[in-house]
Structures are given as C-alpha cells and as structure tokens.
Length: 247
Ligand code: SAM
Image (cartoon, rainbow, N blue to C red; front, side, top):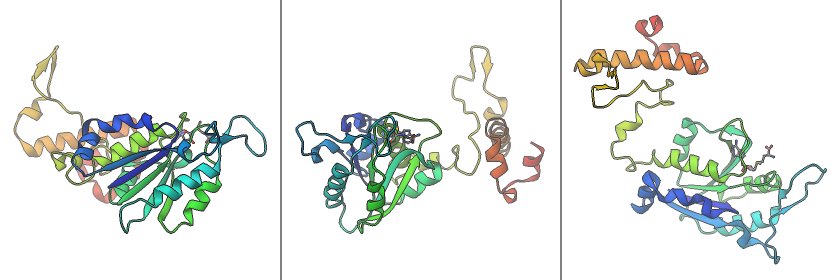
C-alpha cells in the first residue's frame, strides 16, 4: 500500500518509523511518503494561510498550495491506481475499525492534514472531481478538537497497517479483537498465575476450551454492556444464543 501525507509538519510523522508500522515499511508492505505543503508556496514567507471570508477568529489554509501539492502528489502514485483522499476533520464521519478495514483493501491513501481553522472548502470539492481520486473522505477521530490532522494520520495509518496481509506475525490476532464482531474484547491474562494477591481465573487454566470460550464471551458481553451499551443495542439478534441472553 502507498500512503502520501501532505501537511506543514511532515516531521510529526516520525513515529511511523517505529514498531509494527516501521516494520511494514522496512519489509516493503507499506510505502509512506511525507510532503511539506510549504514546498508548494511561492512567497518568501512560505505562506499557507489567510483570514477567513465572512470574518471570525483564526486563519484558513489557502487553496493554492493545496492544489499544487495534490497535482504533484497525484502525478507520482502507484501505476494505474486511484487515490482515496482522506481529510481528517472534527466535522467528518467517525473513524472506525470498519473504515480501517475498507482502507486496508485500497492501493493508495493520500492524507491532507489541516491546521488552523482547517482547509479552504474548495480543495476537497475540487479533489472530488479529479480522475486520479476515487473518493474524498472527511474523517474524524472523535468528538473533540485537535490542533492538526497529523495525529489523526498516525492513528489511521497504524490501524490500517496492522490489517495489511503479512504485517502481523499471527493474523489470528485480528479475529477476536474489540470492534471486530461487535463486542469489546474479554480481559486477558498471562503468567504468573498469582500476582499481588490476584489470581488468574481458574477456568483459563483448566484446558477446557469450550468453557474458556463461553467465559470469554460472557466477559465480552458484560464489558460491552457496561462500557458501550450502544454496541449491545447494535448487535444482530441472530448472532446471540440463549446463554448470551442470560448474560
Ligand atoms: N475549525 C475546525 C472545526 O471546528 O471543525 C477545527 C480545526 S482544528 C483546530 C485543525 C485541524 O485539526 C483540522 O483541520 C483537522 O485536520 C485536525 N483535527 C482536529 N480535530 C480533529 C478530529 N477530531 N479528527 C480529525 N482531525 C481533527
């Protein structure tokens, strides 16, 4: 997968050299290129922002550097691929595991990192009509306001990269996770069996795989009901059994 990130703080993406994402890049499964938006300015101050039409506080990112940046980046993508342009914004659709899974199936993501009060709205409108772009997604990390889109890129790229085939050592890790299958994950334990007066539940040491699976499902149901009742309400009733309903 190819990922291009455009913004005014390309150095903010340094953590993408580390851990799972870093290994995916080293092994050639993921190609990430960070671009400095100011490379497409033409004044001595390398200006990327201006005052908002209509008045109000703050500054808005100018469309011209964005237009030129996208012209250049879109000219250099993987042969034959169309890009998904992802624009992080608190006004976007929520980023979810489902969206991460759909991105993991795409060949090319281009991120536009806003700063200040965001990017002139014509940039996304113009991009949506370009042949090199399959769709423009405005995506939000959550109901709060960050200072810029770079943190959203770190989150989205990490969530997507670990889904790429070959990136995780054991792909089974992906099948029983929170936000996969509708429930939050059950609590997990490792050795030692007793620690500071707390014991690992006996059932997990019993070797009885049927009882262990039932215990884990009960724990997942209880945790989800306590923390995220909205997820319980969204479950397909056909996926529940009699014991689930008793839990
Ligand atoms: N004025 C904007 C608004 O009220 O919707 C907020 C702009 S915010 C200060 C600057 C940039 O941070 C945004 O353009 C976006 O790139 C990023 N950002 C802030 N909060 C975000 C969130 N919840 N999800 C994704 N990106 C966010």
